[in-house]
Every structure is written in C-alpha cells, then in structure tokens.
Length: 157
Image (cartoon, rainbow, N blue to C red):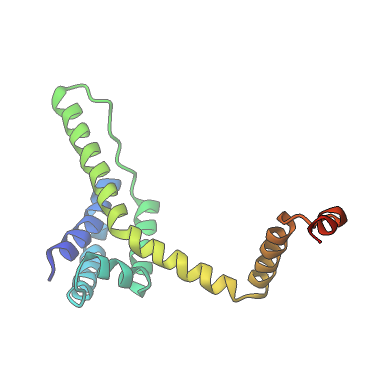
C-alpha cells in the first residue's frame, strides 16, 4: 500500500481517539471498519486517488455513521488549559499536529474538491436554471454596450 494512502487512513482512524473518550465498546466496530478501509486503500495509487474514490464510496458513509454513533455515546475529549507544564506542552503539541494534519488534508483534497466543483458547475449549466442564468449574464453583458446616438451615426457619414 502506498505510504500516503496508509497515512491518510491512519489519520482517519486516529480521529476517533483524538475526538472522543473511547470505551472498549467500539473497539471491534472500529477495527472491522478499518480492515475494510485498509483493503480499499490497497487498490489506490496514492492519497489523492484514495480521497477521490473514498469520498464517493459506501465506506465513507459507514465511517461518518460510526463517527456520529460514537459521538452520541462517548464524551468528547476535554483538553484543560493545563495545570502542569507537561499537560500544556502535550496540548500544544496536539494542537500543532492537529493543525498540520488539517493543512495536509486540505492540500491533499483541494484538487479533488476543485474538480468536483467544476463538474457540479458544468452539470448545473446544463439545467434549465443554468440556461436562464447564462441568458441573464449575456443580457447584462450586452446591456453594458451603449446604444449609439443618432448624432454619432450621422457624424460618421
């Protein structure tokens, strides 16, 4: 499996532990889901390919449903302001890692999101509402051009 794909999947798996105070109740469900996700990831060339395919796969919905299910039964992790230096340093490290992970995920998924947006816009242009918008845009474009005055036409002759 590509290292980028593995890192992406590992980050998704860590999201459960980073977000919630997990109980052993969900260990089997998480493991079973991620067995399927890792197997799915083996068919992907790189992290971008994985993100493109995963976003439209039923596994993504299963992942999101499990996240919601766990969120309804497990309390969210609390990060104190930190009474000790170790706790505050740990929180700072976590925040930086979390920020870095969000940045990396954003960078990885940006081209796929841009492509999806372009495809959506293209499909919308082919709908009746899209045709109306195109006609409206053309109308406003032509409206910008001033109608020549009779005196302008007479002066040219």
